[in-house]
Amino acid sequence: MNVSIIGTGYVGLTTGVCLAYLGHKVKCLDTDARKVDLLKSGGTPIFEPYLPELIAQSSANLCFTTDYSVAIPGADVVFIAVGTPPSRDGSPDLQFVRAAAEGIGRHFDGEHMVVVNKSTVPIGSGNWVGSLVRESFAAHHNQKSDHRFSVASNPEFLREGTALHDSLYPDRVVIGSDDPRSLEVLYRLYRPLLDQTFPAPSFLPRPEALGAVPLVSTDLASAELIKYAANAFLALKISYINEIGQIAERVGANIQQVAKGIGLDARIGNRFLQAGIGWGGSCFGKDTSALVSTAAEYGLSLPIVEAARRVNRRQRDLVVDKLLAELKILKGRTIGLLGLAFKPNTDDLREAPALDIARSLVDRGCKVKAHDPVALDRFRAVHSDLGVICCAEPESVAEGADAIVLVTEWQEYRELNWQDIGERMRTRIVLDGRYALDRARLEGFGFRYLAIAG
Ligand SMILES: NC(=O)c1ccc[n+]([C@@H]2O[C@H](COP(=O)([O-])OP(=O)(O)OC[C@H]3O[C@@H](n4cnc5c(N)ncnc54)[C@H](O)[C@@H]3O)[C@@H](O)[C@H]2O)c1
Image (tube, rainbow, N blue to C red; front, side, top):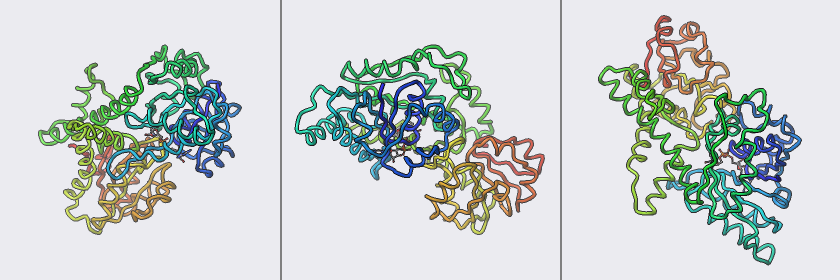
């Protein structure tokens, strides 16, 4: 099928490359000419494991453009995968979705097409996008587009860092539409993925236990709510274990043992039950905030979701509180941060806890040094105002440091020569924000080991 993807960010690029790998003809469109030029020249604008390899294997089915008149005519399916960042009041900023919908309408050739919202958008946005496409088509073609296109919602559940795996081997595919034609077209599009009939790439083997992928077909509003409800649930699971972590610390319990004991209950499950600094990233914060603001439009409050957000904010403050309790005075101290990205295996810094932690420490007069295996260039480009010293090597972070905070649990930090790290530091204090380090080993090297809870 002919597919166009609007937006080549973490979601759009991953979706486009995977659909091309499945054999569809895919045009990826972005208004950011630098990204498109980079993609055309064989580069990738984001760090995502195996993305360059999968692009290389799918290149015969892929092209990149900045031009709606190239991408839209002739498309059977157009995915909107542009950003929906939070506005000041917490509701999502839909200006990019609006521009995409208007661009689609302007260049729509009148042959049947399904317009799919893959961006995370507030409930009701499917209808809104439909009317924008319709109005834009009418304004530019002097005729009505009624019945020539249909709208669907196909929320995305990929995780950065494992985005390709999640897209090729999803737990489920959700498609919401009030028009049966959308469902029929998208079922054909996703058939190889639903039936898992495609050959697995050698570098992304199919999970052994994976059978057919369930398709959940719903009305538009339900699909839109599924995405928010899923993210809010995962966010509150993390905040729940962090809340229990606080009581664990007070009573002398070990939060990791507690999490294991809870998570082995099949009704609960062990995923998203890791205590620590809490969630970051472009989704949980903005999506929980959007859900709260949608509820407010209907006169509802969501106290559970709001509490999860409060607990998550508190986790970041705990880092500074712990360092203050240990060092007594923060002014003039040198603090090293290991990890800037909001989680390992991505270069995404949106809502990363490291940003708030660095800001608080700098505000208290600390000299902050930081390292990240892949996010350093992006950090330098976007966050130079923070006054953080960027270190190309983790060992440089340790040089003269009064304490090191492990913010992001990159595998390479587990494997550092911690004896050498200790020798470079002024005082051997490590705050393990993710329970990623071997406490006994570090204590063996003379470290004072601190964790977020306990
Ligand atoms: N990142 C994730 O892990 C993730 C997971 C699930 C869902 N989502 C949702 O998917 C959507 C996209 O997220 P992302 O992380 O990929 O965002 P992103 O910021 O990485 O990418 C968005 C891209 O859209 C482009 N763009 C903006 N306006 C455009 C326009 N009018 N025409 C063409 N291109 C345009 C931007 O230049 C950018 O490259 C968001 O709604 C997000 O909430 C993200």
